[in-house]
Length: 331
Image 1: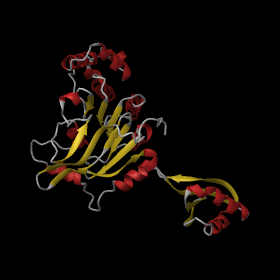
Image 2: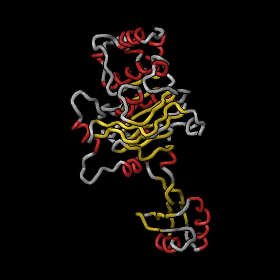
Image 3: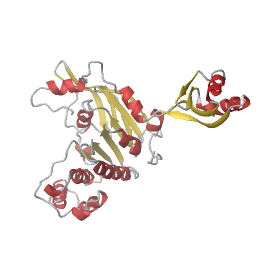
Image 4: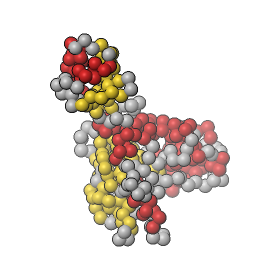
């Protein structure tokens, strides 16, 4: 992980976002979000992860008071979603940002600042934060997709919010654009600001998030610190001779299973007994060159938890295809 994990997951109980049983239905057959419970602690970067159509954007809209839940409860900054007192402390970026194309980036932000009763000095500060100062005089129609996304983040930062909600901020960008936006979010997460980030890109979560919640078909299937989700699963062993090491390892105390994997051995065992395993192999005349914990990647966890049904149709896609006219549903 490239991001310092020094703030969140400390069990402080200082929750900026908390939901219990949050549910959104469209008619009797379509459920976009089902019995969702999540918590976002002050000062953390929280990754809200799931495939497209899994209910992420619908959830964020409910947290902002843009969509009313069918059932369940939510508290954002201690208030009900949409409460004016809490909205003043929230900056949000939901789906693709919209700006006046013939105004400059700076003038678009000035207009927003005036509407939001934000001091004009904040415009220059946020332009600097998202690295758009040099292009601030250019009209938005000349901006690349990545620059427009950065301008959207700048708009969300205008009020100097306690809570920043970003919905797929790197969606549709090329690798350079994704890297630029990711760096901005990483820098924002180093201070006291709390970031709630929805994404289907695992690289983002691994690089910038402290904790993640993984949703599938509108349901929370896992919520944990990133390092806990990628928890150790056994040991990886390099030794010679390999076949003899495999034979010995199978009989060592604490080893539930051992098998060959190319030029290494995989041991299903508690990483805490690695020293005992190493000692047993050495006493048997095995030359051990490597013995380390085996970790799952976050991608492996994500794919396992969000595996599509055998029919190959995600419930979110069903909902999107059948949502009543005039209703807004998650992508």
